[in-house]
Image (spheres, helix red, strand yellow):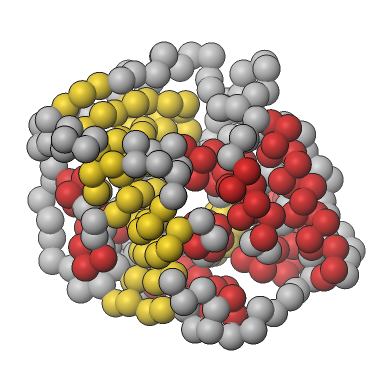
Length: 317
């Protein structure tokens, strides 16, 4: 989670970049080559799978917080999110009917900040973000801020969700997404946005509590083409591979080999990766070309939670 100041340049436009960031790189490596992408040994995995259950969509109250026009860092420290949550508890709730208007206001802010993928904006305008956070935090659901979701985790800011999915849809094989793998379901919000854009979405979560929370949030939406898996995200999910797109909400020092093995030709992977030169994470985009070669590009610095191995029935590890 973030502990740094706003990484946005003075222009405040898309994409987010730090002034200290080096220029984007374009690198060609052969499949299996050991560079910024390294193969790591696989461990045994016994993922457990659940599909969201079809039920009528249930609306819940939503209320606006003070709108922020700034593009903030991808996530904020959990302590800051908790402080904001305490402020939100004192704010009055608005009727559920206001949710749609607040979402459209959020979408307009994203558009003004530079997001140009209208399909992504439309998807984010459809998904009720306030249903994925605690009732006491719904007053802030449509601000460009991260919020705590339990187990020391946060929901990513709308600007980051839009940015990463926009990058995902710029893949070599075209913007249409047939099959997507999400690493780190969290509360399920990004999975719901992806489900509005893809024919099938598989989302894997290693923390039992978050996996069950995502199921609870997503079940009423009846997204029968969205599959939630409780398992080790570093291993991906081979039974549904290959994937047109893979997106990760946690970052390590290398990209796990399983993700690359499960990426289809013409597919794209978007994930945070540690950059030793910068001493921080950067957003990495990896394309698998039609001939099997892999292209890597380094984008803006970000700060996400660490990518951990294994599964947990309780908390962080």
